[in-house]
Image (cartoon, rainbow, N blue to C red; front, side):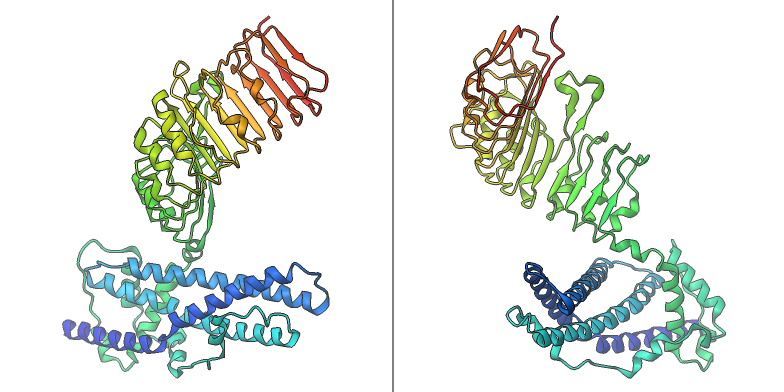
Length: 510
């Protein structure tokens, strides 16, 4: 009798799912149309906000903006729902399969309802636009979808029946729901004999189960839509495992925490754009990072204040070879060059969108490889390069032109001479030389840098005399001279450093 009852439940459930398929047919097509409408609305807002909005038009534009936010939220829910459906597979036990099916019922109906509400909202927006005559030139092809007649199925009402109307199944229902929520480690089957003998509509029974199951889960649902998760300064030692389930997450910060390791599960965050592990003990990133194709900002350097006078005070992270596949990266700092050597530095040449690059543990023979990769980085604005030791020469002489938009250059390590491309940087704002030990006269070629505002020399100059000649550094506002052990005199000619506002000298030898 039990097996017969189970078969009946399966048959009824399958019938219900067939009805669901008919009811929700066309939702994907309508989502595509609404997405096009959202793009049209965003374009409209950009154009309208350029002008001076007054009266009713200003109020209407505000309503349009709020509608756009609402549409975007619903699209996020829709993407999350479809992604979960794609990744939920491989459940063998019977109860797990039922749980997956029941779990999808209410979210799918809610999505269908929200999408229909959006269609009405978009239609009203279009009617207002025609009334004001403000968006006739902005309408896109997606707007044609809003003229369709809203469908309606009379069966929808039964799917939201009050749970109180279904009685006599409480104990068995609660047991099944509990198993669906908490899970079971063995193959299980429960008796539904009493259900078969009753006269209740099976669809209502399933809906009552669904309602309770959803209530058990819905407290977790809002967090799945999180886009920003910031643990900065939090006293945590591990990334919470639940974070890997945040499908929409695009910003994750563990800055200044005690976290030592990034779990492999981070690879599930397919929408992640920013990962910040600065000032943490993290010294190596998992290979799964290379699967985050939307990643734009990877910040991972650590500064040890206790050894700030040492080259080792700034440390980077090891990253696996293949970083070139992260073509959207705009920020990458600080990665260790010696982990994969020349291979890693060549991969950097594929990152053509980089704005900020930091490389540590550089050796003399790797300098030219880095320079060759830099020529592809047409958008690079900030460059930080640190050698593997204070005795290692930092050889960054390039035969090709450097990125012309470089604004900030920080070099940490011994320089036999200043890189030949630095005097060519017309947009350079900041030049920092640390542990460079440049010989006297090495800075003369930089006097004509037209945009330089900040010059930092920390153990960066080994000469006894530092001479700023007439007409040099005409826009320099801040000059910092630290730990220049051999320096005996600083000479500033008349009309040199005319805009200097801040001068810092010290500590210096007595």
